[in-house]
Amino acid sequence: MSKGVEVIDIGQKFGLFSEYWHPRIAGELNDSYVKLVKFKGEFVWHMHENEDELFWVVKGTLLIKLRGGDVTVRPGQFVIIPKGMEHMPVAAEEVHAILLEPKTTVNTGNVENERTVEAEWI
Amino acid sequence: MSKGVEVIDIGQKFGLFSEYWHPRIAGELNDSYVKLVKFKGEFVWHMHENEDELFWVVKGTLLIKLRGGDVTVRPGQFVIIPKGMEHMPVAAEEVHAILLEPKTTVNTGNVENERTVEAEWI
Image: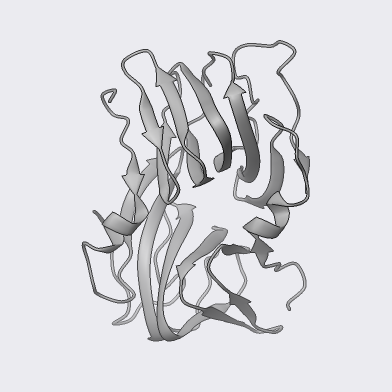
């Protein structure tokens, strides 16, 4: 393998942590991070003022509540929530998702509360 | 569904085209595109001077030749090729991959030849 080029196995990385709503960083490219996250239950309504955010589901069914109507994302599907759009992820059962977003993105966006966490490398 | 928020089904999108080495755009976020591409055979050695590029394999086995040693990427795995690093994708059998890269990225990077194509929305 070349120095600095690592093949990342998503399933293996998901096996390394169990906390919900605590994104882990699995890669960086340009100004963005690739993050892995496990969801279960309801998050909080929030938005990212300056960052579009991609949600890619690899396990489970993710409901994303939106003010104008909800979307449901299943394994093999993704959705992009544009900057400025309020949203709230909801996972009735455990969901594994990949997030792609600028490095500046905070998980709770414009809201700071007990759900606000910093992503760490995994 | 909210206006402008579309759930993208990767398998459905891959069913809409058959050409190899001709990326299709399935989403945009921030300054980047999410592209779908089918590989078969060898591409050309090239590099992207200013853009890191992510390859995510969803079907088949992708060999990426690198000057310092090759990497093999299988379904459920991804690799990020940093800007400035020469690489050549090779697919012994058909590969379906997701690319994530800045909108400015040209498929053949610093090389312009008959393999150079523009990505279109799908």
